[in-house]
Image 1: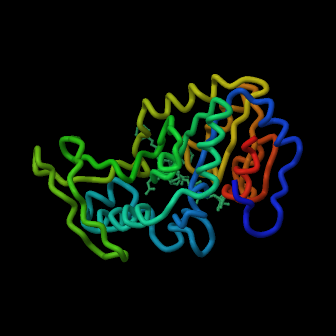
Image 2: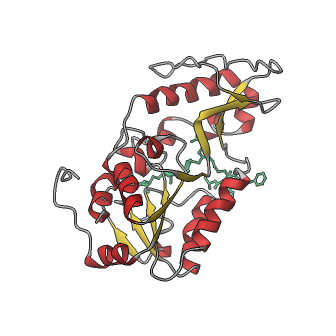
Length: 256
Ligand SMILES: CC(C)NC(=O)[C@H](Cc1c[nH]c2ccccc12)NC(=O)[C@H](CCCC/N=C(/NCCC(=O)O)S[C@H]1O[C@H](COP(=O)(O)OP(=O)(O)OC[C@H]2O[C@@H](n3cnc4c(N)ncnc43)[C@H](O)[C@@H]2O)[C@@H](O)[C@H]1O)NC(=O)OCc1ccccc1
């Protein structure tokens, strides 16, 4: 695995030892995991999406009902952005780690970069940007979608061939319930961890619930919880060990 750009990556012997001894690893990933691929996070100063866009106007069922073309345009732009980027060395490292240990990836991310890096994702707890369904009858939609290269104000969502309803992105909006099966699978994988196993908490601010409660499940299961994040977060105190550096720089050093 290529050496990361910039200053040497400092990963403590404790963290390396914890990974070496682990038979099972659950990786909980957030927007920071895809940041070095060029997918903006939500809350990072300046570059975060919620710095530029108002989540209540874009990521809620109410926003959709009020103005579907306005919301669809934003998600179609994000589809274009995700299609234009590549997995980073962090995504690739997690895929490689799965050849050495039992690794389950649980992600809040709606992109497909883990899968494109070769990982089998156990749960997309906030849905997927590349899954579409009818807002009215719920029928899955796999037709072509128009993808703007630049953010556009409005774009008509496709029409459902079954009921002529509007097609919506398969993501979980604020105020919407998480996909039950995915969330249950995530909790079950964390509860199955034990002493000697590891939960990696990578690139999440730990602000959005119920996903932000997942590290606590690993903690009470007795696993070693390791945070990989350049910043302190709302879940840092649920983690035993912290690596204050980026996903693409740190995760490759854990593959041994
Ligand atoms: C804002 C927050 C307070 N609000 C919530 O949590 C709400 C309300 C709520 C529920 N329970 C609560 C309890 C307390 C308080 C509030 C609530 N939760 C909900 O609404 C959830 C739904 C939440 C899901 C919303 N959808 C998203 N995304 C999809 C859409 C879209 O993407 O457009 S959430 C969105 O933000 C989430 C969190 O963001 P992060 O991934 O953590 O990213 P962030 O930018 O915040 O942080 C990035 C981090 O990475 C670090 N970083 C940066 N670069 C790097 C790098 N290179 N390497 C490593 N790390 C890096 C940074 O330092 C930073 O720490 C992501 O998951 C992302 O998916 N639904 C629900 O509760 O439904 C109920 C219900 C129950 C039954 C029946 C009906 C209803």
